[in-house]
Structures are given as structure tokens and as C-alpha cells.
Image (cartoon, rainbow, N blue to C red; front, side, top):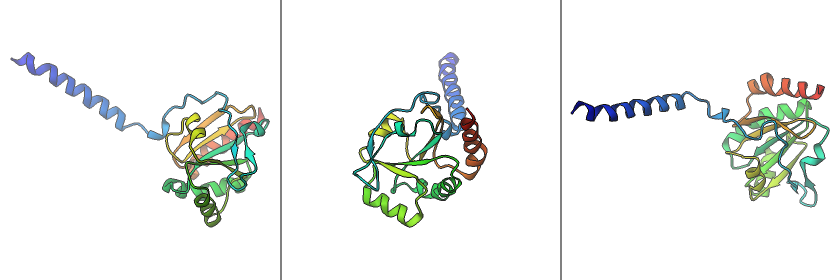
Length: 176
């Protein structure tokens, strides 16, 4: 009779252990299979000028940052002042990727809150985001001179992440 209760009790204890480990992990630290791999190629229209396009190929030879954002994203609006600071620093070109958005809404947001980007590409259907493994916006990638992804931030960039991780990484990548 006692053995009948031991197995469910052990299973319960194991499940509680997995839950405790999972709850103590930072969801922003989801490892990306794209780190240290060539960034997926794409060619999409620019947000502000549909007649022009953007491709990561045009950034070869430069360290640069890709920020995936959308006007409907609350966390993107929270992150925006930090991006404005990043854009002003001119440490590296900051390229926006407007993800699953309406062009008019995105343009209005940038007009109201300031435009930190050198340019924004428009990913209206989300295909580029899918290729980059976007979990949800905002997400930010740092690319090296060869177009290899060296860092991925899931969720909003904070001043702390900017100063302790992104700026030092960019400075290091520029040396190589």
C-alpha cells in the first residue's frame, strides 16, 4: 500500500524541482542558435521610403546593431529613450526593423518619440523576424564586420545592458 504512494510522491517532487529551476531563470537569457553565425540575409523595403530597400549585405565591413521593434509594442516604447541615447552615441549604425506593423503607425511613433535609427527596414509580414528567431519585440542584435551575430538581447535594452554589455562589445568588435 505504501509503495502505491511513493511513486506519485517522487514524481511530484521531481516536477516541483523542475518548476523551481525554471522559475529562477531569466527569460531574456534564452540562448540563440544564431549567435556566432552569419546573420540571415534579407532584402526588404525601407520604412520611410518604399522605393529604397535595405539588406544586411550593405553593412559588411561595419559593426552594426539591428533593433526589431513595432509601434504596437509597449516594451518598445519603454526602450525607445535608451535607443535614442544609443543612436546619439554613434558608436555603431543602429538599424531598425519594423516588425508586423502598419507603416503609418510606425512612422507616427518615430515622429512623436524621435527616430534613433540610421534607417528602418519594414518587415510587414514578419518573415525576416522569423528567420532571425524573433520571440517577440523588442529584440536587438549586434553584428560584427563580417555580418556575424555576436549578441542578442531579448526584451528591452536598458541603460545597464547598454553600458555593461553592448558598448564594450562594440568597442571590442571594432578592434578586430
